Image 1: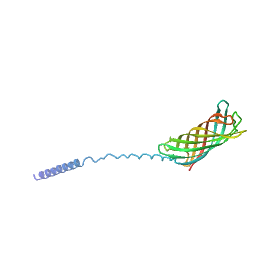
Image 2: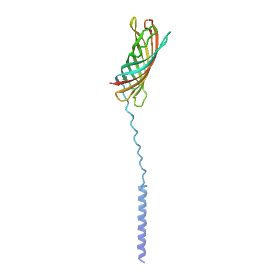
Image 3: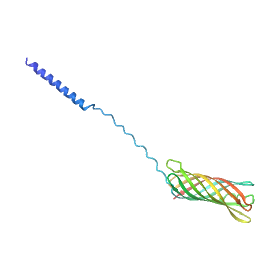
Image 4: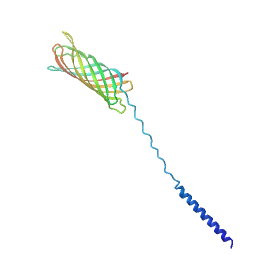
Amino acid sequence: MRITPIFASAALAGLVSTGAMAGEYSKAGPGVQEPVVSTPAPAPAPARFNWTGGYAGAGLGYGNMNFRGGDDASSATAGLFAGYRQDMGFAVLGAEALLAPVAFGSPTLPSGDEIKGGGALLFTAGLPVSADARTLAYVGVGPSMLRTSGTAGSENSIGGTAAIGIDHMLTDSIMLRGSVNYTAINNVGQTDINTRTLGAGVGVGFKF
């Protein structure tokens, strides 16, 4: 008859122990935690190219000159260019000198004067059109000059030029160029012919 209390005490102790463990589990809460998902860092933006500085280069082109009251004349040309730009961040401003000392084929005016070459001074404004700002679309406008030679000697005539173009920095120093320009010059040659020239060209430059 004394064995029964012992088993009863053991059963009671087991119940108490089980209740205590259950209480501890409920206080600790669930042991499973949600995994932490790491988001990869975004790729860095490409470094923005800075156009500030001087540059110079050479190019080849082709132009068609219309004479008011006469026939047209076309010629391939070779030229040099040099300038300076200031990168303002939102735009690129500058000035550029163009010199075309060679007109292949010696095109002539209706008066017989030969076109020997010309030049222009353009004030330019451009906008970067690529994410890294290495491609620049620009416009330019300024005075221009045309040199002719005839029986009465050489003569320089003054007019104006407007240009549009795209420059692309192939490296930090080497620049590729494509451009189109329109030039209007009056009173050219011995007979004061009015001329209108549309030309296009490509070139290679070096940025300092």
